[in-house]
Image 1 (cartoon, rainbow, N blue to C red):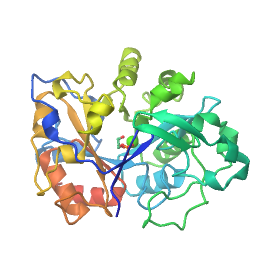
Image 2: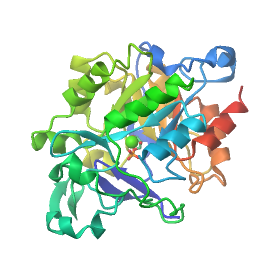
Image 3: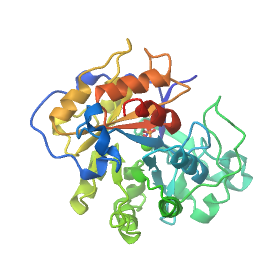
Image 4: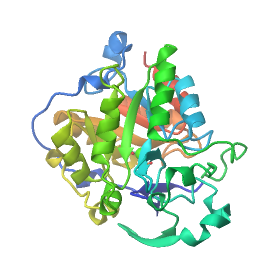
Length: 350
Ligand code: G3P
Ligand code: CA
């Protein structure tokens, strides 16, 4: 299966970020309390995480290995499978509504190419990785985007659910987690702002809408664990100036790190967590680097992306093997398209 990496709305070929770009350094800070799952107290000795608690399982775009990503169905299945967090990637509509979509563009995850009424809205944008022609979320109102059907982006995954679900708004996702919490299954939100500089350039700042929604919905007061993550350091700095929510700086390795302004040294990253590409932690021989150890020495949480049953990392025959090595390495969180597998592997450490 084709390996892929998508950053800031841009689809990349598989990359192999080297841990060596992130140098060792200095003393530790406190980890945010939100990282510990509520039932972790009896598992502390089993894990080499920063807190000793079990690593969180983050449903990457929902149970996206099974259902079209970022749909309410994909999120619900992930919750049913025992994920600790669901992960909405957020972009904005022209009328300023936060919606879940992996990219600023729409052709990979919706049937917009089949909508003749939108054919003339296809346009070329400059992205951090070059020009791209597509349909862009902030060229459409929410009402227009709600006419689109979600589709499975990955060849080889179930296509049976295409055209059954719509794009979800951030508010609808919050409704879903509240409904589940009311039924005794409380999950957290691991929220990624996608390509916020693109939206702010269009007059659509993402900082206040995200923070205001979290506040207005009373999510912190209600005890929902929350992380905010981004590939853009400037966005995270703006959030940090307005909020105490735990932040995660997403990272990539070379050659994309320099291109995206992400060739940062670990000790220079101000956020309490880092989102590491798994090739920063795993070696092609099936071993591990010292990335987790160095991050933990700095007091930083390490969340790793992305484990896929249908696409194990180089050096591993199965996702189960990969997950086992990641957990043994002490990662604090794992993004996966298949949360059920990760939950099952984690149970072996209990
Ligand atoms: O957000 C971190 C993780 O989800 C990997 O990034 O490109 O799949 O959103 P991406
Ligand atoms: Ca993401």
